[in-house]
Amino acid sequence: MSSLTHLPTDILSLLPLYINNIETFINAASTCRRLRSVFSNTLPQTIFQLAVASAPTFFSPHPHFLVMAVAPQIRDWALGSEENSRRLRVAFQGGIEGLYDFCVSDNSLKAGLTLDRIRMLYEARFTILNPLTDKIDKMAGNQWYETKNFWDGGVSEPATIDMEAHRAAMQIIIYGELFGSSMRPFLEPRASGQERPDSGSDSPLPYFDLETRLDYIKYCVPEWVCRNYPGFQILPVGPYAPENREDLRADQYALRHILTCRRWRRMWADAMAMVGPLFAAWDAERGPFETAQAGDEVEGVWRLKLFRDALQTMGLEGMQLVTLPQEKVAPELLEKARRIREQIAALEAPPPVYIVGDHLRARVSQAPDPAQDVFVCMAPYWSGVGGHSSDDS
Image (tube, rainbow, N blue to C red; front, side, top):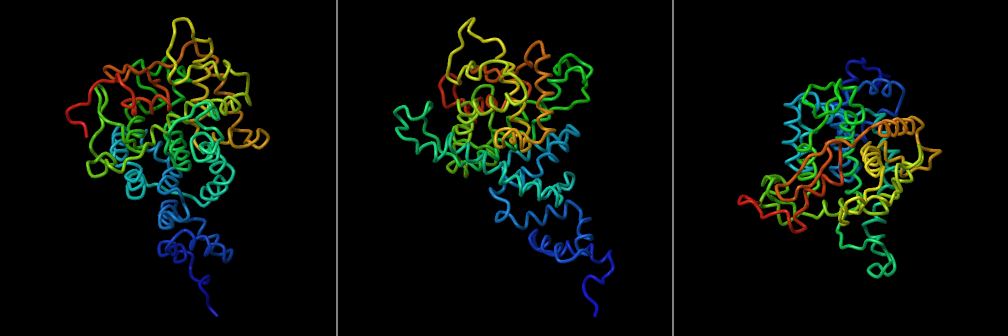
């Protein structure tokens, strides 16, 4: 008796186009060796579309999870040309939902997933994502608030924060997947044939500029207080469209707390210590609300911060450093971290900075600088940044 598996290979290879979602696809592939062999050659774009059909049930939090899954492809595609970078910035303006729709529908990006990538992400949910989420929840979420005597010394940095830990974890990881490679030109300036990436010459090591990084924070990490101020502009689109303003969350405020709090910095100090001595004591760095005093800068602090920024922007892979014991961290990741440390130790000065805000005058590194990127977006929380522009949304 004839069966489905007796059909020619060229016909069987068309079946994924008629399957409804990724669960059906995986179940079909596991029924026999014939289908497993044929389905192993399915185009990544087709597999991604099947994954999209299964969201948000199997890829939560939605849409962050699938954006994170294809973020390395988005990065490489956008760095391929100025036009692609421009189109990515436009996609950011639609918020995380707009970026997700861009991944799903853009024909030039051709976002795709392999079954191996899906299996890796499934395993990472339990070994990396869930543990990271738990740590963040203990820094700024429900577990943090449950600390005894919360407002009376129970925690060192009490604050009123409204955040969802899974979403915050994804926002940090996506930032790293998108912009982590932009650290390399600042750690390897001579690899670009130039002393510094801002010299004006063409570089074979492309990187995203600050405006692109800020567009991700502005629109994909929405914040009700993020608005125009002199030298900083928010467009009334996506999450900031007039009809959406009332639904804005306080995600930037939450992310700023997470990225600068003592628990986060101490956690990454432990990760840095896996590959070498700290450049400075982990708590020698000034806190976000501590005023600089002439002569009080501790030697090595800028290297400490740069090393932390480099590690925490390595995306999903880098989060192994803070979620797994050292003996279970991939050896190649530890070696990569050691090379980064050596490169930072060899630098004579920190990367150059951008100055943001006509009155704010915030210094933001040209290298990926997640905490400061977030700060300049939600700076209107504090006075002194100047009045709102007349076209403020």
